[in-house]
Length: 219
Image 1 (cartoon, one colour):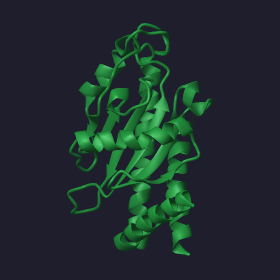
Image 2 (image 1 turned 90 degrees about the vertical axis):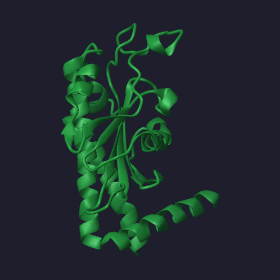
Image 3 (image 1 turned 60 degrees about the vertical axis):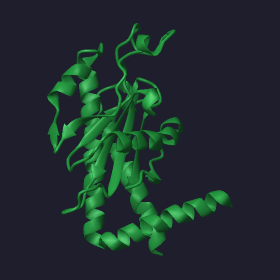
C-alpha cells in the first residue's frame, strides 16, 4: 500500500541525510560518536520522518523548525541556523540547520528538512562550551534563527562571525559544511519524490502518514 511506501520514502530521506552528514563531517563528535540527527517536516513544521539518530535531538528539533518558521521569511535556496535554547534550541553546542523545500512557482515552502549536530566548540569560558557556568553568556555564542544561505548563496559575514568565536574554526567550518550538504541532499530527494509521484499524491500521503501516526500514538 502507498502509505507504507511513503512512510519508508520519508524515513529513507532522513536516514540518507544523516549518512551524508556523518561521512563528510570533520569532527569525531559526528563521525565517530554519531552525535547528530536529521528529519523531514511538512509545511506546517509537523514531523513526517526522523532518522534513527539522537532522541534528545529529534524530540526537540520540531520546536527549532517552528522557531525558524515564525522568525524568518523563507525563499528558495535559504538555510537558517540556530543554537539558542531560548529560541527553542537545545544547548549551545547543538547547531541546528533548517532548510525550506520549494516547488516551482510556489511562494511558500512545501516541506522543510533539518539537521542538528553537536559541535566541538562554540566559544564560551571553557573549551567544549559545556563547563560549569552561572549564566548562558559563559557557555558560548548564542545564535537565534538567522539565515546563513540567502537565495542559494552563503552569507559569508554570518559564517565569519561564527568562526571568529570558536576555538576550532576549521573543524567547525567542516562540520557546518557537512550539515549544509545533508540539508541540500534532503531537498533534492524530496523534489525527486514530487517528480516521480506528483505533488498531489505526495501531499495526500504525507497527511495520511500524520493521521496514521496520531492514531498509533493514541492506541
